[in-house]
Image 1 (cartoon, rainbow, N blue to C red):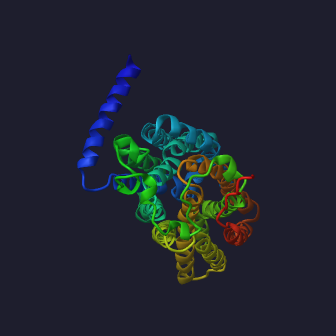
Image 2: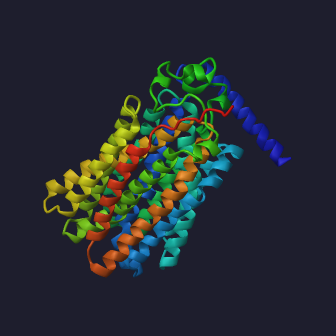
Image 3: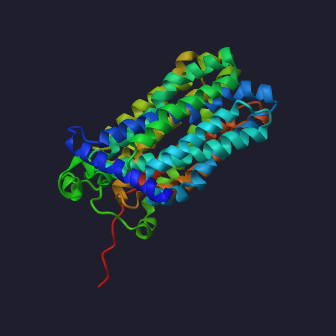
Length: 440
């Protein structure tokens, strides 16, 4: 009875939204973009970019080493990948709205419980398991899946706009988080972040998220006829875009999907290292916590510009060439950072690395959708996430334990530069896949 009543409520809501969407002049897909941006603002700044700001004051209170404490972040990242196939399946079964609302609420609970942590195992449970599971259900995969279904012509740009939220949120929140930690303590600051995730991400997702335009009687890009008619007429002249959908088995046999997996792993490895250890490294050099956190905020802001720019350029230039350039920028930025002795050099790193890393985040997502279509996107993206996040999860722990042993970040940071070189090579090798002609 309760299940039937729940289904009737959902159907009534969908029917009402269906009629409203048809009357509305603004395509509802842009509501999805706005929602995605808000979710990324909150989760990016309060989860993915925040841990490094808390690291030194938190471990000083709890009595943990950098290497041990960052295991919590690594658990959070690993869970993203391990749960990705299950999340892809749940999206198909339940849709994005229920999944995002439940997941983001769980993430907020995990952040709130961080305020009570007194031992390292609690960091692992609250941030690693609870928050990690929550963002896995309500963050990257549901958002990129919705973008892929709702948009075809402007897919790369739309993904860029959504993903820019993480950078924009970090630009605003990183210095604020550092300020709050200094004035109200790190425990109370976790409570503030929990409230932001719940109000800015979880509640709006429960109201506005819709998986496909067909769910509300619409078509991709706001079209009025068959979806294929809304693909640009010159799309088949650009080999970076595919009109038809690939089946998963055939897609997994192409070299491109594995090159995309490796290049994204390289980028995530570097991003997770810098997210967790950049602020600590700068304070080791003598910069104040607020100034050090501000560099992370600026990096996030530049990353937002890179994500939007990468999405826009990815509409006109094959993404693999843009990716190769971005990885070159990333490698140069990391070398600059490791040899930086002035504020100007640090900001040069921030601009180069932020723009490059942000572009890569968007362009690899667009490549999956452009190469293989929308229908298999969730599974293929989840497969990429499994590998990427497990590799990325090891990055901050590797950096932390090397620092604990050698009191230096030289080896971890130069390893990131090497990973960027590998990513650039893989980008050039990620040529558009070609279907094999059927045998006669």
